[in-house]
Every structure is written in structure tokens, then in C-alpha cells.
Amino acid sequence: MTCREGCRKFYVFSRNWRKVKPMKERTLSIIKPDGVAKGLIGEVLNRFEHAGFQVVAMKMVHMSKKQAEGFYAVHRERPFFESVTDFMSSGPSVVMVLEAENVISRNRELMGATNYKEAAEGTIRREFAMDIEKNVVHGSDSPETAAFEIGYFFNALELVRL
Ligand code: CMP
Image (cartoon, rainbow, N blue to C red; front, side):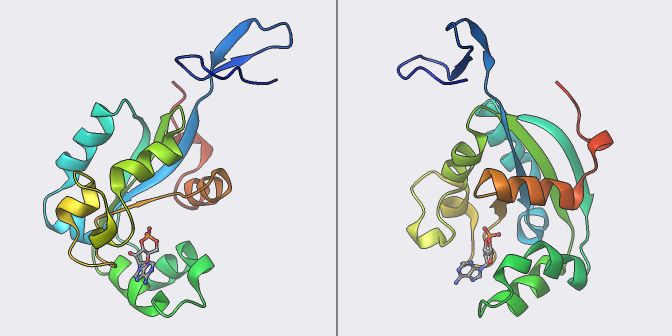
């Protein structure tokens, strides 16, 4: 299987170049405790739906400190680990799985840079984040991370097949 550059949509072609179906990707998105506390659930969901992302799973969770540590295990050695896991277990979050073509990079564009001061105008973090930690949203940064993060919160039965 390969993809032909220059096509308007990102289609997968079979060996004889017959169009098969668009390539879909999934990502984990979290509306963090600061986003929920500020009443931004609707605002963030609106942006996702407007971008054409489909929500294939969603729930509200209040992570324990241990659950937050497990989720951010990759950052265990970083200086902000204690603080970010305290913050992520400080209140409810909304966790969801989004599906669309190239959704991982497109979601990261919508969110903006981790540090809201470096985020582009019009992005979620630029408009609503308070600091580098309380930055409203989280999104997976690669297909491998997405697979781990989706599996951390959802089992196969909870993921709707569209
Ligand atoms: P997120 O995209 O969820 O990934 C790790 C989180 O750690 C990040 O967003 C921030 O909420 C938080 N964080 C706090 N300080 C930093 C930092 N200096 N660099 C990166 N992430 C940070």
C-alpha cells in the first residue's frame, strides 16, 4: 500500500492504484481540570467538531494521583512531573478519542504549543491557557503514544466504530 501525493484527500491506494478508502487516525484528547473548571468543554468540543474530528469515545474522569502518574509515566524524570500529576488529579477532566485523517497533527495545531506564550494566535492554548502546566488540553504526539493513551482510558467496547 502507498499514497499518491497531491490528491486533495489523503487516500490509500491499492497496488493497482484503485482508490480504497481515506486513511483515518485516532488520538487521545483531554480537556484538563483547568479547562473543565473554566467551563470550556463546549468551546473545545465545538472546535473539534468544526475541524471535522469525530468523537468516537468520551467520558469524564477524576484521576487519582497514581492514575495521573501512570498516564504521564514517560515524563517521570522531568522536573515538572510532581506538579503536573498533582494538577491532573486536582479535579475532573474530559477524556475523548478523536478520529479523522491526520488527526494527531491537526489536533496539535488546534491546541497550539505546550507553552501558551509560544502558541499561535487563535489556538486553544493561546486563547485560554494560564501557564505552561494549566494549558487546557492534552493531545497525543504520535501514533505510538496515541495507542498507549487511548488504551489507558478506554477498552475496545467503548470505542464506537464509525
Ligand atoms: P501535555 O501536553 O499534557 O504534556 C505534559 C504536560 O506537562 C504539559 O502538557 C503541561 O501541562 C505540563 N508541563 C508543565 N511544565 C512543563 C514544561 N516545562 N514542559 C512541558 N510540559 C510541561
